[in-house]
Length: 228
Image (tube, rainbow, N blue to C red; front, side, top):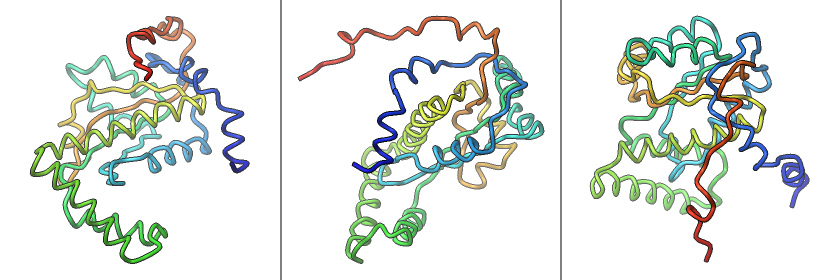
């Protein structure tokens, strides 16, 4: 075990972090995320796991008032209840999913893995590309759920992200209640091969956020665990 792993194990209490984390309903607009933590946020997004390392995602990060106003266009009308969680946040991340995964994209990923030293032998590179195409084709043609499969990878990223920012002491609110079509149009996402999926506001909880004072509620261990 290296010293970095030992440090992580001794300094991060996951249960404590999970109990501290909650869905923030109101942010303290006077507090901003530091430049250092913005880099940590980007690392969380970039280094998230995904099936066959497919990474079928794109992220729009709003850190300026103008940027947040553009993302807030996805909260107009029926979704206006989420508007303050966007404009009042320090930063906002829009998670986007690819709309199609093809051989060219998979080959690009394989080439990047090769550049990064993932393959000790050329045959391993060929085997990896073969596996990528195999599993992608299962979802394309057999299960016919390729779009849903890609979205599941983005949700895997979101779960990783919410825990990660909480470990940094940053509050977050994930929002599915957004006008995805409006955001697709605002950023030309569909033309680029992506579509909006979920928005996450980031910052620091306001003192008067009612949700911060409520107890956490989860199903019991007896109901959700089977230990064998």
